[in-house]
Image (cartoon, rainbow, N blue to C red; front, top):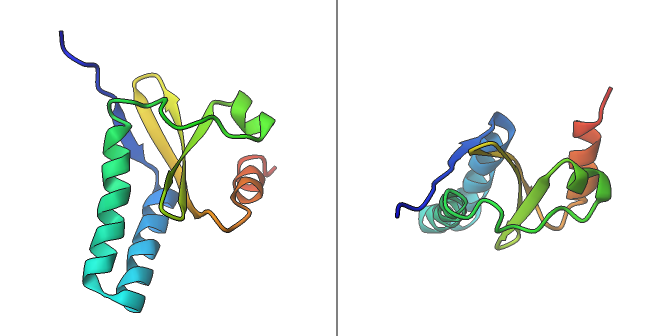
Length: 110
């Protein structure tokens, strides 16, 4: 029996944030470190192709009701949602930020 796999689509904001993270590591600690953090994030996203519900639901009730989940990679929080057979990656936030408020304000802006 074949294991079901899901597509992972990294949306533009998340892709830009991933590039910013890599650039930050590159400028602060070098190529190897930038490659390591990028690989860790991509490896985690790859795991979502097999286990899309592995991250817990968001703690904030309004985001949880909409199906948003998160997964942690070092100090980064990846916010995503499974829709059909695709995992949509919305953002990659520094976990030290007020990422729930940042994401909620973007999601619900008029």
